[in-house]
Amino acid sequence: MSNVNRDPNAGGLSFTYQGETKTFTLNGKTYSVTNNLSGSNTLQYSLNPNTGVITLNGSSFTVSADSNESAVLNIRGDNNVINGSNLSDRITVEQGSNNVINGQNGNDTLIMNSANNSLIGGLGNDTITLNNSTNLEVNGGAGDDIFNITTDNNTNIQAGSGNNRLNISGSNNTVTADDGNNTLLSSGSGNTISLGDGNNTLTVTGSTNTITGGSGNNTLGVQGDSNNITLDNAFDDINIYGNNNTITTNNGENSIVIRGDGNSYTTTNGNKEV
Image (tube, rainbow, N blue to C red; front, side, top):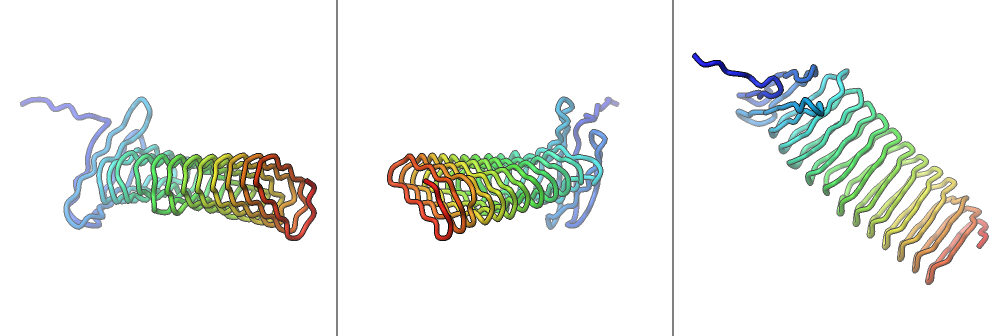
């Protein structure tokens, strides 16, 4: 009879029917797993003891962390629903598509390295990074969130309410932020960006972006070209150093600096000092 050494940092769960639920514990943390596939299915899991990261390899599962145990997960597979804890989680989609990642409560870090997945931050000050593109919902939820958007053609990015920071280096993205004192850094081109009411700070170094901002003490700096920017109730500095930009403000008293060529600035109700 030979001895079999079981790896304490790896294992698997086998399922025979849809809706079957099992649990596993790794690195002192327990996860609940439900099979969403009609028929048998297998989930493999492994722990990197040096980093504490647990990798899940499988498709069509719902995996939920214990609400009081922070999750550090790498996801490989398709059509999974991953629910984090109420603490600060770090969840990365390494491979696969059509996964839905719910950070839940806490200051979560959600990273998408594979295309066409959905990241939902939930409550808390989350950091969401898109290193690949998606047509599915990306939503920070309530809280002061940070968005790092490095890729192109993301069509449904919702920053949610709060004092969000939007770092957009990709192009042709559609991004909406609700009310709050948002900070926008846009170096990409062809983006459509909408900011809610609040004291927004906008720095635009890319070109051909369409940007709207709500009421508040908005500050605008433009170094890119051919942008179309509309701000409501702007009461702060506007500096335009790029070319062929169209800037419109409503109901504001602005100090304007225009250094580029072919720029158009219009205010409908308010005073401007150029």
